[in-house]
Image 1 (cartoon, helix red, strand yellow):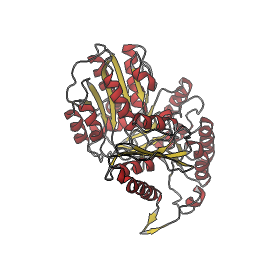
Image 2 (cartoon, helix red, strand yellow; image 1 turned 90 degrees about the vertical axis):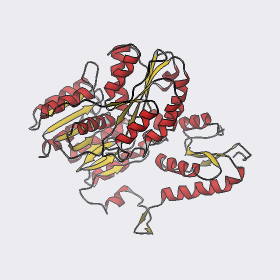
Image 3 (cartoon, one colour; image 1 turned 45 degrees about the vertical axis):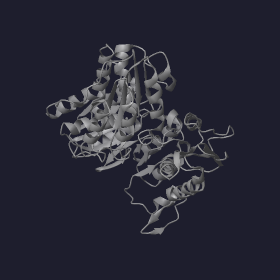
Image 4 (cartoon, one colour; image 1 turned 180 degrees about the vertical axis):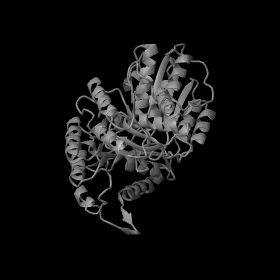
Amino acid sequence: MTDPSPGTTHVELRAGAYADSVALLQVSRTVQGLDGVEAAQVAMATELNVDVLTSMGFEVPPTATPNDMVVAIRLADPAALDAALAGVEEALKNASRRSEGGAELAPHRTTAAALREADPDAVVLVSVAGQHALVEAMDALDAGHDVMIFSDNVPLEHEVALKRAAADRGRLVMGPDCGTAVVDGVGLGFANVVQPGPVGIVAASGTGCQQLLALLDHAGVGVSSALGVGGRDLSAEVGGLSAREALRRLDTDPAVELAVLVSKPPAASVAAELEKYAADLATPVELALLGADQPDLTESAERILTRLGVPVPEWPVVGTAGPATGKLLRGLFVGGTLAGESTLVARAALGTVGTELGDLTGPGHAIVDFGDDSLTAGRAHPMIDPTLRLDRLAQVAADPATGVIVLDVVLGHGAEADPASLLAPALAELSVPVIVTVVGTSSDPQGLDRQVQVLAEAGAEVHLSNARATRRALELLGSNA
């Protein structure tokens, strides 16, 4: 533990202490709001979190391991330390408290025990560290429930085992790393608010699903269900096990006039098998499978509208970005599919585009998904916690080689309550042009119009279509895709 002194920091390790990343994010924000505290980060000491803390000026002891909790506080007034630490304790206590009707209840010790009190038709949402998701999800399947696995970093062999077990039981596994679903009109995870309508979506892509929800909503078309199946479901290893079950369910839903299967680039053999499976269903199926020389998500949305006989609207743009200041495209995304789509579009025009974190400060073009498993271990998703992206945004903008920056902001339930207000101050300081895609609907709790306006007033050019936003960035660089 470091001793506090004026203008310095307090850092301590708590060996064996644990709380999930979302709870720790809330604890950090609570403590940061206390009198005398300039900055606070309470996090598990993963390698990435230690890197972030170091960049913030905290000296984390070299003995720290991912099994330790770090409490790091920068004090404007050293006398505030005792109150700040008391605030940490109170916030941690509140984060773990479970109450009902004013009386605190002891948490269930196992998923199986909790399910004995659950509605037999309830969907079970699993959100634990990825290596532990198998046991909890299997308990739910054994109890006869569908499962949505929000957890990321779930081993591939665990996913295959769970989905084979679900197929044997006639159940659906959504995920792992399933961030978006709409089931019976209820949004789960990161979900936009849309009107019910004739479209049903099966999504091996969380933000791909949200991009379609946003574009269809802008065109006045509602969605009855959106079943996320996890980004690896259409891989050769998983074989589309959940996509097949989800399509079967949409086919039996009388509210669904057109089913849509959206995915990150799939294994070719799995895509072919699913196309054949879809052709035998009574409900028509539109395939929105990203890949080289395949339609982007905006083009897929336009095809959906055309099949439904709905006019394709103009996709809105607010603000105007200035000319490129350097030669390189740099993208910092919170949505994996949005990052992937931008990368596909950019590579068609630019050739090589790096996708690793280090590429953002390298000699070439780069587009990085900050929601990738490798960047969320022990951290909240960047749709909730912008710390890491804001830190790298400042570095990228300071590089004179950077010509245009592209970003995304994703709205809806589960996402940050006011992402534009967190991003706008950083954007207002930049001289490099910034193109932002805001994925959201007019009914989302953040308010689509207000978010767009705040970003535009900070100097960004704001699009609803991610593909159009990327092509606009390429246009500023003098390239066309």
